[in-house]
Image 1 (cartoon, helix red, strand yellow):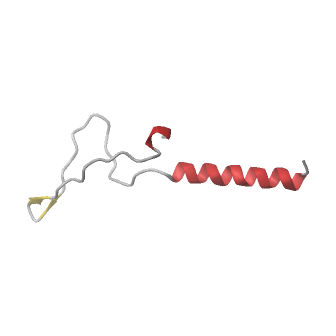
Image 2 (image 1 turned 90 degrees about the vertical axis):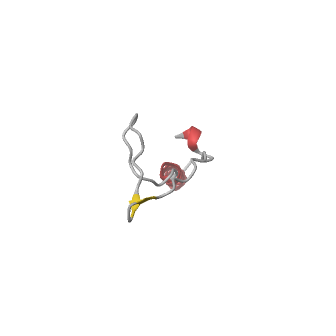
Image 3 (image 1 turned 45 degrees about the vertical axis):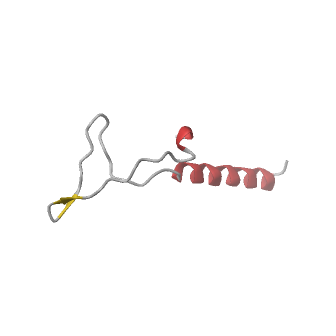
Length: 60
């Protein structure tokens, strides 16, 4: 393997690692073991969305 091939391989591995680490769910940060805080708008509770497992959750 030449230097260019090694460089390309390293680039592909770094990009794939960056893509896999960016996968996840966006949401409010919660401390472990604490009951979730419900948001309110004008004194009314906002309904929480059901937690559906994401395809890559086992990898995280």
